[in-house]
Every structure is written in structure tokens, then in C-alpha cells.
Amino acid sequence: MTIDFRERRLSHMSLTFPVDAKLKDGSPVQLVLADERDVEPLRRLYRVIVEEGNSYPHDRFPEQDDFMDYWFHGKSTVAAYVPDRAGAAGMVGAFYLKPNWPGRARHVANAGFIVAPDWRGKGLGWLLGTTMLAHAKQLGYRGVIFNLVFSENVVARRLWDKLGFKELGVVPGAVRKNDGMYQDAVIMFRSLLER
View 1 (cartoon, one colour):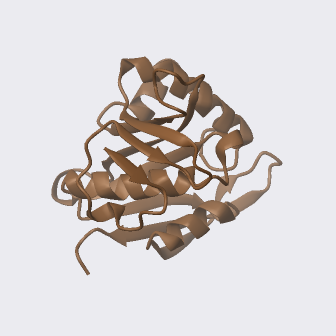
View 2 (tube, helix red, strand yellow):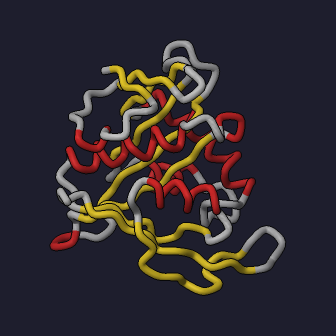
View 3 (spheres, one colour):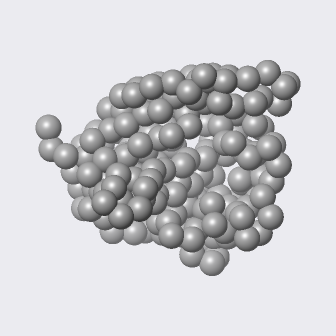
């Protein structure tokens, strides 16, 4: 399947992985359902994100079992490679999708995203976000919630707003920053039901 970055109705499409796409600058990217081949590339990329300290709660890189629990166990994980998995030097982005709660509320998904620093501002976040929405809907989720969007992560908050997420509330001082100060976290939600 090939999609264009500018496709705004992706959430209504049926996905078949791998997905070959183009970013807004024309760069080819391939999205794959992650498996054991993707563990080490994802570990390398996630280490960079954790060290930045701007978007995930880990204050140090998790041990192998914790990493696998966070990114793989009980989750659908999608990895992005440029130009594709076979020819890429490394992973450029990823997301996971999982039930936010068990049982009667498992129809509400939770997702987490990462984009490599060198690939920010090229539309990869938008592509991952729209793909996640389509994948979540295809898996039967009725909505997606983000429990911990760092308030100072303006780029992410703007992206989620453009993708139809609404702010439900703020958790004051939820996140300790690298400098020891605290920032709020925003809870965001989007329904996947037809409007």
C-alpha cells in the first residue's frame, strides 16, 4: 500500500502493512508492524528520546524487560524506516498502540510516539499519527487517549490538535524536567466513532 503525506482521510482507509509513503518533502518512508528485527533499532532511537527528556516519563533508559513491556508486550508497535526497512541505516520513528484500561474500557486506546531528531519537521509525526488513527479504528478501538502530553511539548500538542484531539484536563506539575523544575501534563482524547 502506498499513501501520500497529504492524504487527510487516512483514518478512513483500511491499512495493510508494510505501508510505503512519502513525506511532505518527497522522502520515501516505510511503516512496518514491528517484530524482533525492530527491537534493537527501536532501543537505539528510544535511548535518544529518553536522554532528551522532553516527551517521555522515563528519567533513565529502561532495562531490557521494562523496555520490552513498554514498547512490545500487549501492544501493536509500528516502526518507520527511510527509505524502507531493508535499506535503512536506522529507524526514524515509531508508535505503540494498546488498550489504555482493561476489561469494560479496553475499547479506548493509548498510544506513544517517537520521531528521530533529524526527521522532525518533515511530516513524519503527521504520518505516524494518521496511521495510528487508522490502525486503531481497524483494531476496533472507539477512541484514543493520551494520558501524559508534556505541556511544554508544543509541537506534539499542536499536532494532536490538528488530528482532532481535544484537551480533557491538566495534571499540574506531573513531570519533573531535566533541570529539576516541574511542568504540567495534558490529557488529550479523540473519538474514533463517525461524526
